[in-house]
Image 1 (tube, one colour):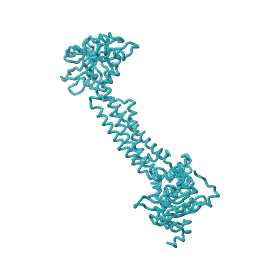
Image 2: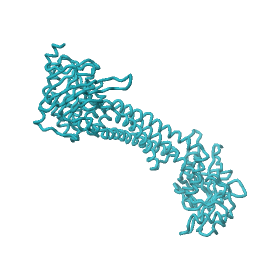
Image 3: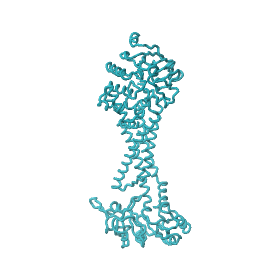
Image 4: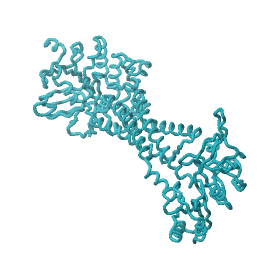
Length: 248
Length: 385
């Protein structure tokens, strides 16, 4: 069952609360222990960055938080919901209403125009196409795309523009948790910073939280807190980007 | 979601065209040989179809199909007439004779001898002249295709001049005068058909002790056709069939004793396999290419049920277009050739249904493979680069 939160509850509650989360891929000698007991809390209104070397379990962790992968053990609630107690359809519905995604490769459907791509989450939720397109256009204007770009297919847009479309798509249905996987890895430094500024401006608010998985040290200063992962566990949570720079 | 499904499909122009072409081929290759087969098979009993008036055919018990003529004694006509429930009965001659052409070559022709008094059993449609003109001495009526084709006069420069009223033809050393041109259903052998009276036909035909090929009869109004046939079989010891039964006998003979069904079935199967190979695999590849986007949709909250509907819609869309184009091409090509050649092309609604089922099976198979893949898709794959 999905419960909507009252606005006054939002700021005081954790968006994500995980304790001792484990995940293993494969069995026997070939088993890979991707998460070995992760403890993490993400608060409403904050931008949390997950950093760490390749294979440290960052992507596995956000997959579990986004409800696209089941954990093996531990407890985890996302927006007060425990995926392990929900059916597959309920989890899918919950994702559709509450989670926004920004993927490393953007994953924009190449045969849809920018505005149609942004309208997809609304159409999934049952919004009429005409209304969805109108709302998608408004969101694209907010991220700085003009009318001509809206009607372009992703291939005709630059990397930065495609990422803006992906951000618009992740926000258009007003989700409470946004997960981003390496959002700036395919962008140059300047465009990466612009994209993060946009995310910070549009995606972070009292009623929503943002989790960004990244390797990109250039964007650490956009984070409220940074969790460092190593070998399937969170080794450290730093309260400021400056602390991260010092650690580095 | 339908709009997204269709845009995904139509946006990938190369694959969409590939799938549609595959299904068009499948539809065409299933429909075309089937239509030819149906046309050829219907020609095997075209003579029964054209002789529309009688509802009982009486033949020798050894007869296996319409061309398998085993002559009867002329007196059998009287015995059939005397059978209870028979309104009338007349004899019919059917034989293959040779016509001598102007250039000295010979052409085999089917000669049909009609009852002199009633002319029952005549051609279904006269193009020129009248059936009653057969009562003139030495007269014959020639079928239109034969008059224009195999019996046409050949000029020294190679041109052909169709037979017309008043022309003469030499049949088995007998001079015959063309008094009419008729239109008939083409025969299986596709050789010219000549109508004349029974007495004239038996004069032309090589002399044998018995020359009567069939007795055609009409049951009295209200009489049970099958009972009358049974009575003829019992009393006269000849086989008696309704037109439907006689057609079926002929049809099954050709089906059983010729390799035609297997040949046509092979071609139809190849068409089906081409459809599966091209369309099925292309559609599956299309789904594989879009797996990342299906995964994205799944991650963003699209249920398996909705994804199933999307893929089914995509399969239905290409199926409908491919089927339509294939059937349209087969019909158009059949229409063009039928107008210009003697091709046996018949496309009844049953064949349209069979072709639709074949395309449906291909689409369902291709969609099932794709759906299985998408249903099993882990949405977490969207985070893999």
